[in-house]
Length: 314
Image (cartoon, rainbow, N blue to C red; front, side, top):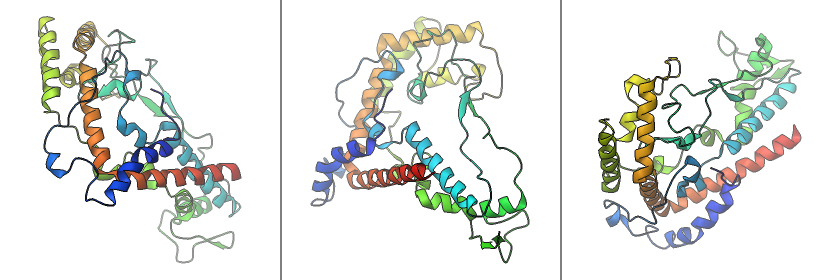
């Protein structure tokens, strides 16, 4: 799935009308009385590959490119601070690489509500539970000297010295690492998803989802498999899903199950129905959190501008 790398302007535009209304009334949307009912569905898309899955909340999430831009800007600020002490920089942003040789279907290929979905492989790689990424170490991974450690962290192994100086220059608490984080001011944005109130919550017992799961389960039973829902199939202990440290070979049973699973998802448009339900809860959440999301989008925009200036200065 391709997302606009400058989502903040789109997000702010989407919120403009709702935020203006929220200033006048207590909420922006249909009101708290409707929050206990399942939100109405919009159009149900026919989903045949992960790249077709788009959700309204995507406009408010950081892209991988933005996350990397912010992290590298923190590194640039840390390096600049370290050079102020006459020391080398200590990059802290490794690059992630796929280490198993299996193709990476992207994050939308896995979801707690529709399990695993990668029609490109047709089940040939099973649930691909061994596909994972590991970081490459930064180029300079030599041990830090005591002066570098003090300048970087503001402390050494024995704790913070009473008179913390490097090259006759005082080292503040937290050192260059803290100074770099403060220069970008995006720590909360970088620590995973920090959407207001935890983001949209989609109950697995929404009747539209349980019906889609029941249709899928009936299809699977017709093929000789008994699973209550797609997540149960993906996380069957036989596959050791989610444990990439265990190199369990992908056997014929897993391949056959994943193939049947995929066929049933495509036949019943399971992922399309679940995506439509997720989108409905997204719209309700965005509607009820207009002001908070607008503020978050503005913060991200400011952080990206700081990051761009730091990158230019480095």
